Image (cartoon, rainbow, N blue to C red):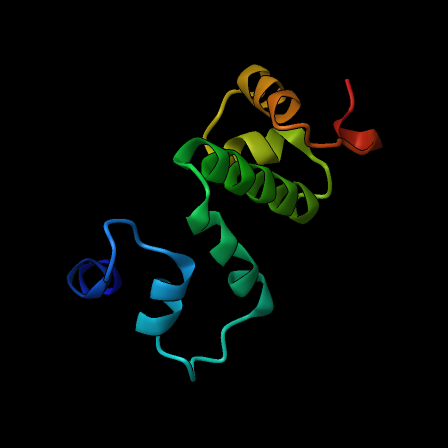
Length: 99
């Protein structure tokens, strides 16, 4: 529904973070980390995706206590691919996640 409203009400060809803020309900009590993601909408898709993936893996790495096997299961990636992806995104690994 949000995307539909954005498409129908956007004043420009591209949807900006300001457009998203305008359409989103303001009294939702959103968490600050959600608000911090809004600048990603102003980036090219590849950069926004890389930034999101880095945040995603850092978040789940913390939740799993650095356990790469659990992170691989949670993310649906094989461990070898996961290590490559984390290196590509420059995600810092703690002692437990190091090879």
